[in-house]
Structure formats: structure tokens, C-alpha cells
Image (cartoon, rainbow, N blue to C red):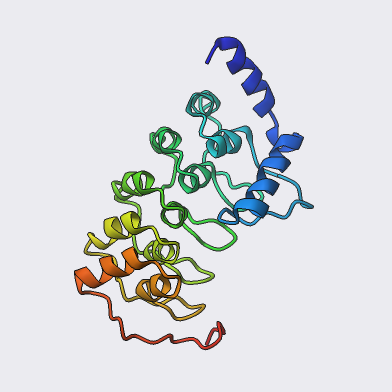
Length: 225
């Protein structure tokens, strides 16, 4: 990246939430990928700063430049309730994750304001195994923390979406319960994998011998008790 390009990028990311490209990024992300934080386009990208944008895109040089001011709040949530680190983790931006985690004021276990999902949950759902490993190296990160809305753990999210490598990484830890059910459907991670036809994830669970393949759902028709 030349200095000229860097200056242009920093200029674009100044008050980025007011720029049309911020709205386009979030709108396309939500309506096409459907595995990212919920976004209502009518509200606008309020709080989606240049640092959020750099984390979203995975541009580590711009992210580092934007982090230079000491007064910058690296934990500030945007309109989706997510931080810069949440975007980087959820989209598998490993180098940006590393840069953000170098700051003492960054909380690696912070949950979003909308569904109470942690960075590890977003990374696990989208199958970003390297980011999962990076986060698990931090003592503050709870590998078994369920979100507050659906009650799904990172293991449940990974199993639901067929990410066998992430499932194996999480199951290797002794502090992850492979039989914990969510509060929306009452399903275990094993049940999510079986329901969605992810044979490799089912095989991983069975090989470890910890999952109960006969456990039934505890919630009927998706209604919470």
C-alpha cells in the first residue's frame, strides 16, 4: 500500500458512517450473506466507524493507522450492536483480530447488544478456525458462553453450520459441554448437526463418545418454555 493510497483510505474512513459505502456494505452483508449481524438499512449505519469498516474488509494497515489515536474507543458498538473486533472475528480477518487484541482496552469476550453473542460465537458460526484458535488463547474468553437470545453456544453454532474443524477445536477443551441444549429449540450441538445433515460433525461427536445421540428436543415447535 502506497502512502497516497493510505491517505485516500483514511480520508474515506473519516466519519465513515455518513458515507453511502458504509450503508451498502452492511445492507449487502445482511441481505446476501445472512450470517452476519442484523442490520436495518432504514436506520442507517450509525456508529459504523472507519475502524469498523477496516475490520469488516480486513485491511490491517488501515485498522492499525486508525487505532493510533489513544482516545479512540476500540470497544464502541455500531448500529448492529457489534464492535470492530466482532466484525473482524465474524469475517475471519485474522490479522486485524491480532492487531485489535494487542490493545489493553479491548474486551475479547464482549457480547453484542442485539443477541448477546460473543466474538467466539461469530467466528465459530462462520467456520473461521484460525480466529477461533486466536480467541481461545485468551484467558478472558469463555468458550462455552451461550448467547442471551437463542441460548446457543459457540459449539452449537459451529455444529449447526457444519464446521467440523471448529467443532473439533472446541470439543478438545474440557470446559465445553457437548450436550447443552439451546433455549429456542432445545437442541444439542449433535442434534443441530444431524438435523442439517452434516455427517462429518456427527461423526466427530460420536467418535468422542460424549454426545447423547438419543437426547430429544426440550422445546416443541420452536416455542420457549
